[in-house]
Each structure stands twice: as C-alpha cells, then as structure tokens.
Amino acid sequence: MSLISERILYYLRCVYVEARKAPWCSGYHQLRARFIKKVIHNTDLLAAFAKNSRLPKKYGVGLDERCIEIPWLLSRLSSVSGHILDAGSGLSHNFIVEHPTVKGKEMHIIAFSPEGSFLRQKEVSFICADLRAIPIEDDYYDVIACISVLEHIGFDNTYFTHNEDSKEHHPDDFTLVVKELRRVLKPGGRLVITVPFGLYRDFGFFQQFDGKMLSRIAEAFGKTEQVSETFYRYTADGWQVSTADDCAECEYVGWVAEAWRHRQRPRPIFAEPDLAAAARAVACMQLIKR
Image (cartoon, rainbow, N blue to C red; front, side, top):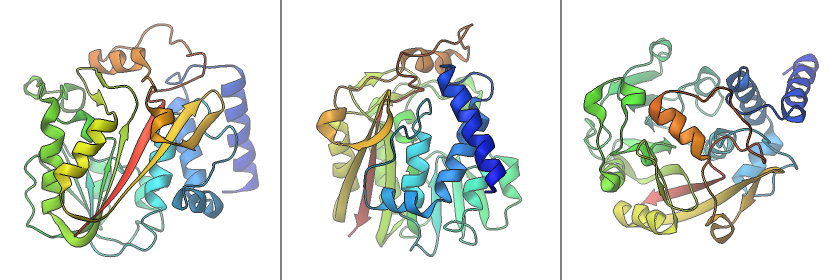
C-alpha cells in the first residue's frame, strides 16, 4: 500500500471514529475492507496473530469481528499446501483470494448459492451445497476454514438464500457440520473455526456460542492431534487478545442481530457507546485431525 493510500485510510478511520459514526453507516464496508487488507499485508501484525500476541492499541475500533477472524486465519495458512475448503464462503473476497497465502492454491467454496466474481478465479471452485451433507469424498482437504458460519447452521437463513424454505430452528445442527468437516479433512489436516462468543444468545437468525458449545465442537470433531483456542475481546479501546473467562459475559449488539434477521436497518442507525459493530468477543479454534 502506498504512503498516500495509508494516509487516506488513516484519515478516513480518524474521521469515522472521532465522529462516533455508527458501524454499518454509509462507507462502513469500504473502510472495513481497506483496514483488513492493510492488516493482512503487514507481516508484523500477522506474526502477532500467529503468536496470539497483543495487538496495537485501538486496533479495529468501530469494526466488527472480521478484522480479527481474517488475519487470524491467514496467519495460520502460511505453511499450508494442498486443497483448501472455505466452508460457508467466509473468504469470498478478492483481496483474500489473491493474498499470497491463498493465491495459487486449489480452493473450494461451499455455500448455498454461487458468487459469480469468484468463479473467474481459476483456482477457486464454487459448490452449492448444505454443509450438513458435503458432496466430497472422505479425507480430501488439507485445511478447512469455517469463519463465522457455525452460528448460522440450523437457523433462519433466508437472509442469505432469499428462499422461505430456509427458515428452520435446529440449534444443535452445528455438530453435524463439524462431523462432516472432519470427514472430508485429511488425517493431519487442520480445521480452523471462528464463532461469536460470550453469553449464549439465540437470535433466530444465528446463535452466539458460549464455553459449553465450544466443548461440543471439540467433542463432535472427535480424536485430534491438537485443539487450540484463542479469544479476542472488543472494548471501547478496540480488539485485543483475551481469555475465555474475560469474554464469557460479552454481549452481541442486539439491534444489529435484529436488523439482519428482518432485513431492515433502523433509521437513523445509532452508535453503541463503545462503537461495537456486532460481536464483542470471538473464539478462534484450530483442530488437527488424528
């Protein structure tokens, strides 16, 4: 990124935060994308994510958990080769697909419906399927990424599918997906998962996970070579590496969940006192198949 681009991004972020502009207002998605793109090309920041080290002060103020999940994931893909599965289309952005840790690797994206822009990437194939029944042979993938997807499994997904048949309420079905992801993962392969974390909440559109549900993920996955968990918490000072105990009482931004569920944003959009955009904590898990 050029010096001019960095200054523009810094200026936009200062204006956005200092004006206490609410997340999801006009310009939010562009600012978030620029921020994440800058982070994932910063070797020092990726190293901090890889080592679960502290992040810079005010990291990601006013931004949702994607500014944690994407760098955390990419920091764990640098040594990966072979077949990659993006379970749920969490990586379907050009600036992620074209990142050096992903570009050139064969990747499948499984979701409810295709996203045309990514079909032009010759290394990327889009598979329309339900993650509870993956149409792939056993032991195929070297790494599977499941970024903010499990919380939506078994819930009302009409927001994504625009199909009324997608209305359901089966909160336990995330375990079925974990079992399927293990099935298509090679022995020695890694599954990386992120979910919103804190006090359990059922929003109808998705659920926020708590500690007991993380244990159920590990149980559903079965025998492992390794299970690791990293937690990040959001406060008015931004995102920072944390602990499960310190994140256990974190609340999701309720009006955002309701707006997504009903596909209607409030007018005007208002800012939370801490400028939280969605989750106030995120759990990042890595499971290596035995």
